[in-house]
Length: 207
Image (cartoon, rainbow, N blue to C red; front, side, top):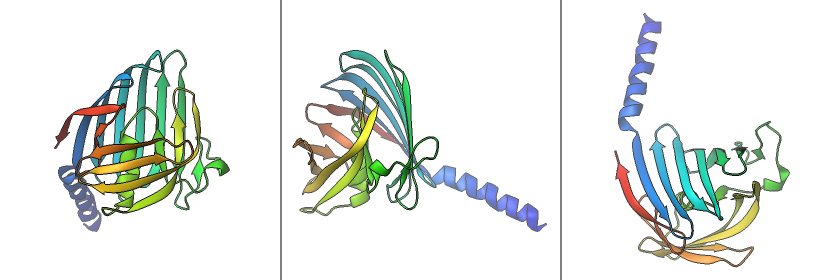
């Protein structure tokens, strides 16, 4: 009897989780690249992101699928990227509870020690990770170290960045290693609406 009740509890909890999960679809159009991104975010027991970027970029046709698993503090747990063009490759990284990063074979990547977030060159979504994780008040800023995933060059390496909350959904993003800086506009969920000379959002659906 206890086993049946426990099974019923698990079944009911699963239905409740599905019923209460927040889901978002963002559609972005690239400006510096002629691309579209279909981005699906599901916030349930963890945060799951599945996204497809397709079009013309870096002077080549490309199709990129990436998947992320993020905890409720917006800390990255897993990242998987499948890049398809004249070169095809995959990148898979994991971040452990102690903050160490490992590759697809479980080997620790010492180079990424201290990185808290990721930044994938082809998408504005990864800006949402530090914005939602840091929860900066207006006027506050913070320096972070991220795993910069350089596509289409199949490279990743640590980069120092800074985010500053300017208020009214505006954030100053700075790459402290090369001097790049830009003000981006995000919505109340921390998703990018407008990123000058990079992309703009066409639509957002919540269900």
